[in-house]
Amino acid sequence: MKNIPHDYYLRFVDAAVYAAVIDFHCKGNFTFHKAFRQCTGLHSLSESQLAQLSGNELALYPDMGLTIDMKISERDREKWLYRNESCEKFSPALLKFEEVEKLVSPLVSRTAETHKRGYPSGGALYPVELFICKLTDDIGEWPAAGHVLHLLPNSRKFEVMQDKSTIENIKSAVLTSEAIGSPSLAIVYVVYLPKNLFKYRYRGYRMALMEVGSIYMLVEVQAKQLGLACRPWSAYTDTMLCKGLGLNPALFLPMCVHLIGKGEQHENV
Ligand SMILES: Cc1cc2nc3c(=O)[nH]c(=O)nc-3n(C[C@H](O)[C@H](O)[C@H](O)COP(=O)(O)O)c2cc1C
Figure 1 (cartoon, rainbow, N blue to C red):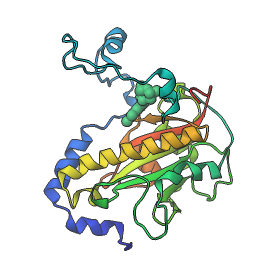
Figure 2 (figure 1 turned 60 degrees about the horizontal axis):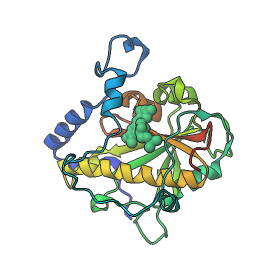
Figure 3 (figure 1 turned 180 degrees about the horizontal axis):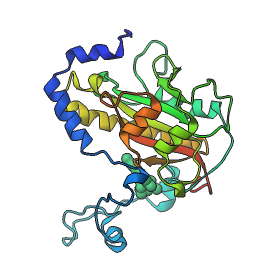
Figure 4 (figure 1 turned 45 degrees about the vertical axis):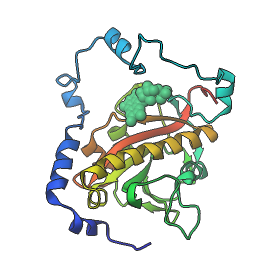
């Protein structure tokens, strides 16, 4: 695979498409900061309304009896692939770096001869970058002084991010709630927008979101295999997170965070 400087993609991007996608994307930003805690809100729905509106399936003909039962029993269901539920609370735990390597191993290329990875990507553009952030000193044999590693899935290497953020800086950008406890790691799924838009334009944005989903699902399944707990997490502010990672927020869009660690109890394992 050719090694292109990352900003080379900007030569091929339509500025109007880029501006429109960034405009839309920014509408989805949240600001989590104590200065705004008292003056921002999403909605004024009550807990009972939220309970009524969440967790539902969408039946299109609910009153017509047009349904067919599946022949899979609960016991059968347990035999097939499933992920654990999201972790409610992480406890402090010792982890070894080799577990981190195993966690991301389903994502990387299977042989040195292929550019293909463990997940599909529209047009093989692979616009989603993974940043692995250490949230605790309790990860044995972490291989670098920096707390953030960037996965290079083709060469099966980690790039050491050169930003000097402390673990505390990164934690304050990611952990906006104490109730979630102490995850050991955060994987940040970031779309590098120039690489995402030059070919498929607006549709590229849609494809990148799907790529993020397929990556975090592989991580969920592998985490279960390794006895680790996870929770996808969107309670962060993009700009604060980019600052913690040392990334330019006009080019790199953090789409989702994945908290990983040991759960207080091992649910479903
Ligand atoms: C993209 C995404 C973002 C999420 N963000 C948060 C979050 O910010 N805070 C949180 O507590 N849970 C978050 N979740 C977890 C969901 O609440 C959880 O997946 C959902 O309640 C279903 O439960 P389960 O994961 O245990 O099956 C997120 C899930 C996804 C897929």
